[in-house]
Image (cartoon, rainbow, N blue to C red):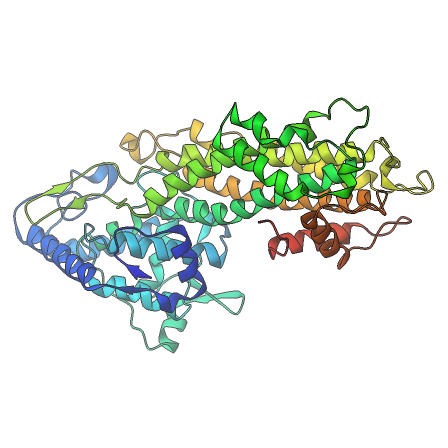
Length: 495
């Protein structure tokens, strides 16, 4: 992968995340970066006033800064803006922030020097990853506080990750024979103006959401097999006359997951007219969530290849002070995707509930000795609790805006909160699906000796490597966690 190429992909980010040594700057990017730095130097040497280069920041934009003070201005900017609070985001998220920030700077419109960008690449390669608090960004004027923490180690300040803990950045730089850098004009602003905190949450969330969408289809197929529902609602003819992309794809996947099922074929002509919605409407509900996923993916891809700081330096004579740092363009689709993810959990819990009702040959609570044993009664409580928690996380953060910077920044996106909530919902969703998979596998025990489709049988066998059939009450909380771990490790064959 090469920084500075015109199109950088989400999968490319994930490749660099796995192996940072795959990344490098190409010659075109180097030339653009050097030219941009020269442009800034010429602006400083001239009498022109340009925001953030020789002025104060935010409401202090009318305060002129002398040429001699421009370096101190950038240093002060970083240390004054590093005011995040709360738990640190994951090391993985910090790395994605670094990757995407380097790529944005490599476009050559930010006035940040080659030395600074190469230092960020070196830190990435040497696994010197900054500690970034999760709270403090309002998602406009860029993710100022998180990005300030991200670049503190350039100055020999802040903390970095080491051996699962955090240590002072200065000591790690010293161990790696790296001296703290002195920032030049515009560099501090170029480093902390941008949407990389929001975008990192979108990228990692999308990477997780894509697999979960595929798994949710397989999970629904297993529940349908356990319920002995009908495969008719997935017929191609039905979805051709309402051809939403997501629902057409899910219907096709359901047909694949249920193909050649001896279990479903055995009751093909039974007297049940139709199944409840959570079984029958999988293509429509899962499909709507897929549409939201694709929307967020497309917009995140655009953002990944954008320049999101301010001002933009076009030449020594021309710079534009605008609003490319505003996070609204990702905040809205992130909120939409959060709702879409939560709905996968909502319908999953409904299917889990159906499997417990004791209908169509299944025992109540999926145990033959209910009464003495509670069976799977309480795991559905866990699922219900997670579903409701997700619903409370669906309030769109982008619906709110609180003026900041003495009113200069009078509309903000709160997209950083949108990104965090999106990933919280996805984490809960993994556990909700784990409960449904546990119920589905138990339900299949009462359909034997009939065999299910290849995909469902493979999922059942995988679950049984970690979780035995429930005969009498035992500690099944550990079973949920074991299946959730299989999900996180992407062990299920979903395509």
